[in-house]
Image (tube, rainbow, N blue to C red; front, top):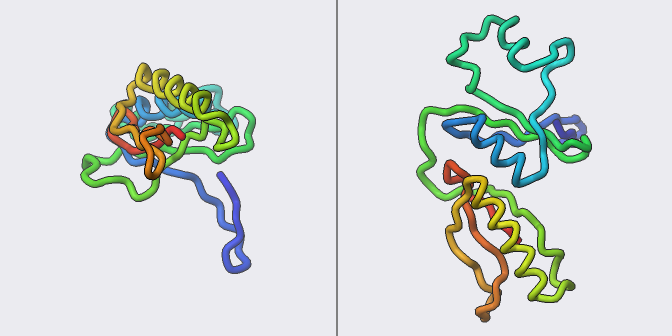
Length: 155
């Protein structure tokens, strides 16, 4: 969880992604972000032990998943099973900043973007569109979707 201050109050938050298959989408985002499956709650060795001890029916075990930054610095991400499919473009999305910024030579930036995209496609992503720099044909970033169609960009 991440903390912030709103009107003098500390607010804890986590990013949650709605999906049909939390385990599948969580595995993809572990690959995309270099995250790992979140540790089970303190006092349990595995998530299965925790779910069993709380008498959660096995058919509900994939109703949620959580991943975390292995260094404990960046925010955790949760995945929540929902019955409805995504129907419109995301208004919020992640940009995977892999190219190094505009100070890096364009050919190297493009090489990094395309190499990352290739890895993510192998992990289940799809390429939606190549986005050129404004008033140019030179690649700026790639618009992609995770295995369930959630938008993200490789920049």
